[in-house]
Amino acid sequence: MSNQQYDEAFKRSAVQLVESGQRGAQVARDLGVPANQLYAWCKRYRAAPSAHGNAAHNQDETTRLRKELEQTRMELDILKKQCLSSHGRRRE
Image 1 (cartoon, rainbow, N blue to C red):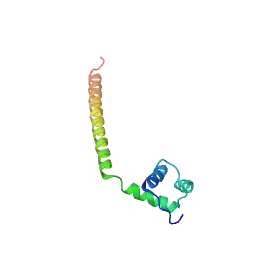
Image 2: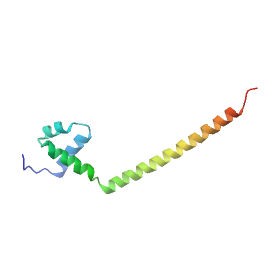
Image 3: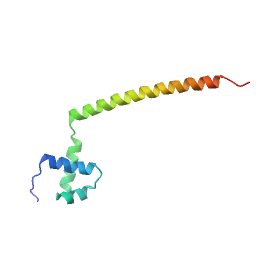
Image 4: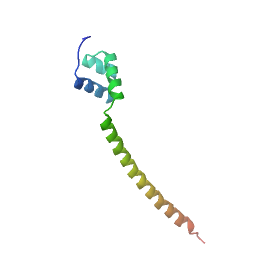
């Protein structure tokens, strides 16, 4: 199989198997693909993610994190106020 041509879907599926946690050498053996070829596919597909899809994912993640930060700040402010009010009262 040294000159075997693999279609794009096959290559991406093989890379997904490796990214899911399976050992690359085992995936290569199971699929009958040279291990160095599989690693080359992994490098290529990891290095060149879809620019549009990656940007959309980054924007979604940024939006989620901003909301989470705002919520955390509000909770912190509430806790600060509670702490100040409880420490401000002294027992006499």
